[in-house]
Length: 364
Image (cartoon, rainbow, N blue to C red; front, side, top):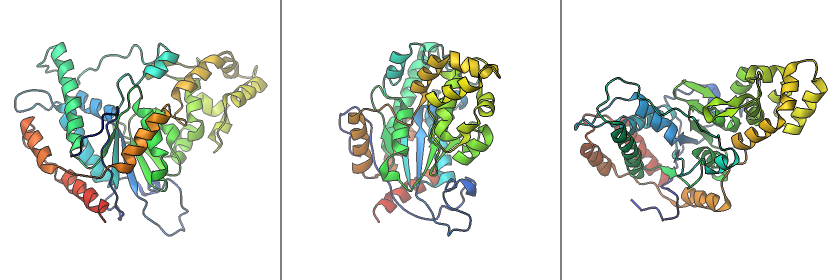
């Protein structure tokens, strides 16, 4: 397979292909995210699967107890590939893009807020049997992640990683990329930050929670439109990223006290504060929001993905990756790697078949 250029980005191939996606487990109402009325002729959109790589890898690393034939933990590596096969089986994508956090990916946001993502608890394995020391576990985790990248390099998919850029921002660039206009984009991540990217073509699949989120469902569930979800979360805060919000004002309160956020209109902080000022004195939540304007503003700068934090040069690299690489599938190499890494008896028939289809469709 062609070696990526030394330009600070991991990038690989593209796929094409149009066809009816049979056997889908994604409910029909989410296929086109409400983009066509029920009376219209049903057409099949191309589908893009966009995976938050570390989110899926660490989920498997934590819960998958798989050991190699040599007794080394390989749950993150093997589990990711098994999850990828399941996702491909259920979504039948025309193309797959896997996005990684670059080295120092949180650097920009940490420069704005030193507490950003501080205090996160170390990853704890969801099992009692531990056959490695703490240092060995760290080395093994790094090896699994590095090795996973090598496996994915042999598949007809795109991998993207930019130095000092978080996967969240890369995913935002990808789903808004003009080359995927008219495609259905399925973001795979348990991270609520991606809710704000839901639109007529983009949905979020949360594998841990087994939830599918689209813009209609988000408004129905939370009373907040995706266009305003980053603003709402800026008020509520995000404990997982160590971003305190406005005390006593969570998403249910925001939906109740700021009903206009359910509208298909992008509201700004000035409008929010004006509304709070007009209603201050009636309900304490409005006063709290007014007093914490600086917190809301800072949180919003850190949380919003509508305008991703990717430089012009970074966007150019992503454009190059998406526009210039052709799909290749080195099945023999993948099987040899699995034997070398002691996978034991595995079944990746469905993934192999769909990888072959992606390559074949790209040549039509």
